Length: 361
Image (cartoon, rainbow, N blue to C red; front, top):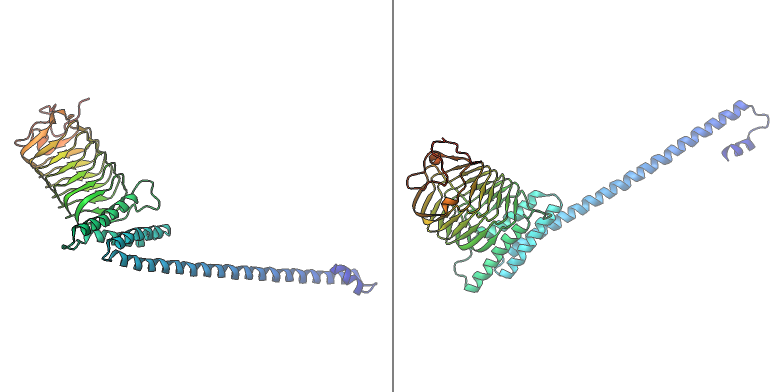
């Protein structure tokens, strides 16, 4: 159309060169104009994109502000004198941790977990009436149930790999971590006191990280690791005192990692490893003391790894069904050639096989 309009204005006898020059000029102008339009479109698009990003950043800051505001409100709930409001605060703090996890902010997740653990570590007032004690216990049991629920294998968002600090806490009631999966992180029950209570890690998987009970005291307590799988974690029971009650590792399987009962004391209670299987890793009872109780190794299998009883001692202990042991894969220390003084000889012991006794084919 442009060319047709030009033809109307050019003289009839205009040379072809003139016409071609004009046409070239028009083409250049058209291309330049198109470039200007394209550039303007790009500028508008960038402005729109920048506006969108600014709006997203504004929304993000607004969301973060809302989450931090929730934290303040929830922390106040957890410190409220009413058990019902504290209980609501537990669920609110867990939901807040999940929302932070959904945003990928692990530091804020850890902060929420630290607050929940601090509730467990804080002793209740000494003058609580009986019904108030029950209500306070429900808050504490709800916290441990909530943590356990977030450490199940298929939980999303989960709290795997985080640290849980119950150091110095006093536990009563029932606290179950059954079925949890420990991957990394540190789980501390160090210097805790368990009185007439139950702690369960049945069917738990310990793949990595550390679970520490160092110098904890279990008074009339029941602790169960039935069917637990210890594959790569460190379980530390160093210096633990079991006074009465029962500690069970029935059907547990040790395939890796390190489990230590160094200097542990078992007094007037029962320690069970019946049906347990030691395939790998290291388990030590070095300098442990067994006094006035029952130790059950019925049908325990030692097929790999190492087990040590260096300088362990026993007094008036009933070694229940010890004869059903399978011959140890590797037993180091004093049991390498002879049992400690006063200890029964493990079944099928073959004298003269040195420090590394192997299981029979």
